[in-house]
Each structure stands twice: as C-alpha cells, then as structure tokens.
Image 1 (tube, rainbow, N blue to C red):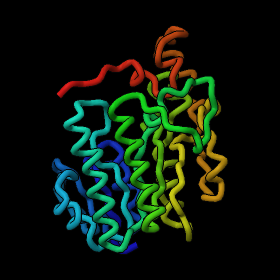
Image 2 (image 1 turned 135 degrees about the vertical axis):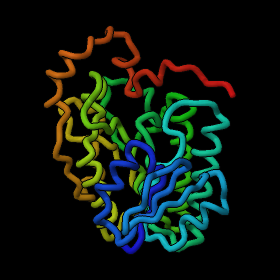
Image 3 (image 1 turned 60 degrees about the vertical axis):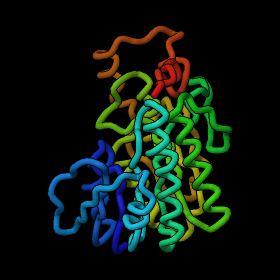
Amino acid sequence: MKRLLITGAAGGLGTVMREKLAHLADTLRLSDMTEMGEAKPNEEIVICDLGDAAAVEELVKDCDGIVHFGGKSTEGPWSVINNANIQGVMNLYEAARKNGMPRIVFASSNHAIGFYKQDQVIDNTVYPRPDGLYGVSKVFGEAVANAYHDKFGQETAIVRIGSSFPEPRNHRMLSTWMSYDDFAGMITRIFDVPKLGCPIIYGASDNTASFWDNSNIAWLGWKPQDNAESFRAKVDASTAKPSPDAPDVVFQGGMFCADTIHED
C-alpha cells in the first residue's frame, strides 16, 4: 500500500502497531485526539476528532487501507461513547465510501458478545450479546460494516479483540489473550488476501482454553502462533483465583458484565 491509516494511534494497540505494521505501506498516517510524538520519515501525524465528519473525510483521503482502533475503548458515559464509537464510525464509513472504499480493519470487541457463558464455545455466527454501552457501540459498528459491505461493497475485517497485551493479566485472559505478533500477523493477512468480504474474526491467539471458534475464517490463512497456556503457571502464582460465581469466571466479557451503566 502507498498509505495506511491507523486511527487511535496514541492508544496501547495503536502505539504497538505503529511499529509492527510499518512494513505494510510506504506511509503510515497516524491519527488520534492526543499527541503521538514526532513523525518518522515514513509517517504523517494528524490530530482528529472522529466525531467531526469533515475532518474524518479529509483524514481518509488518499488512504489505501485503514486500521480503525480509534474511539472510546472501555465502558463510559453514553455521550462519550456516542461521539467516538457511534458518530465516529458513521463518519469513518462515509469517508471511506467517498474516497474509494479502502479496506478496513474494524476493532470490535469481545464485549459485543460478553454475556455468553465461558463454558460455551461460540463461532462468528452467534447473535450479539453486548455486556454494556461499550459493547453496544461495537455491535453498532459491526452492523455498519455489514451494511456498507452489502450496499456498497466496502470490505471490512470485523475483529472481536479479546485481550491484547504483552501477556495475560488474569485467569480469564488465559482464554482471551492475543499476542501482539499474532495480531500483526492477522492484519497482514487481512490486507494480503485478494478478496476479503466482511468476516467476523475472533482476536485471540491459539489458546488451549479458548472460548472462540475461528474455523469459519480458515480461508484467511491466519494461523496464530502463540498460546496463553505458557503463562498459566505465572498467572496462578501471581493472581488469586476468583470464586466460581464471579463474573470473571461465568461470562466471556468478565467484569464488564457486572458494570453499571455510566450516567452522563
């Protein structure tokens, strides 16, 4: 690609993928609402509020691909989620439609299906069961991606990200963890395949204790290499096991399922 846009580039995943995805394009256009440091020779830095339609349309111009990490990444008041994750998604897809429909990686979340139980293994055809307003916003984003694909042919990989950190932080993450290398490998495949469509992909490494079945997207050719099981002894030693009826044990979305609705 000539130009790859990464939104939410100041966040945790955006910061990591700024390095790991640099090989995919001649130029990385990095966007967020906060400072992202100095631009490297192959980078463009753009401060942009996703709720500003005109600014987002300008942001997407001349981009061959988009990795959309931008938006509110945790539970919060509806006014914040609405601007970033509802209006922001609409602005992004309209901008893409008007600018040649570059392929999109949409960072959805396991919280779109958080109320499924941990003793269930689910695939990408299940009905959404969001565990809060944040999860609701991700279900909305998935719906927008599907509508724009069916109506206009806009291709999107909907990635229901589990827990992408250097290593699992608790027992639930032994099932939901995705290594940075596995995520970068997935994104590389998403932009490499000749025809993508609009698949839902569970964003997790090859974890022994996984809740999620990615067999329906085997055609993508992505084979995660890491396994959270290698961290089990460390997690057991450093983290007390929760009680059997704790949300972190019962639900795939963990503690988000026990969170309240945040008022504005």
